[in-house]
Image (cartoon, rainbow, N blue to C red; front, side):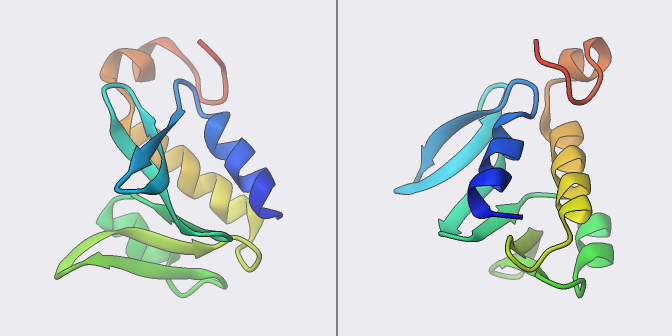
Length: 112
């Protein structure tokens, strides 16, 4: 998958929007909950839960993402990751971070 395609996939998440994150790009949902940050071109930090992070880490292009001693999600090298795995990670972070009403009221992959 190309990096630009990955960014389109992030913005296709219902309610997702782009915002600054300490001078870097980030993608958020609802009242500002971070879904994904972009530390550098070609890399996405996806804020999935610990269980999914640990199970996905080790797949090509996916490493654990640490903030100090806290596991924060996964670091994804877009050119190396299986596109289906990236889609799974994006869906999971959206379900985790989107507002409750949105989760109840919309199916994944539909726009408001």
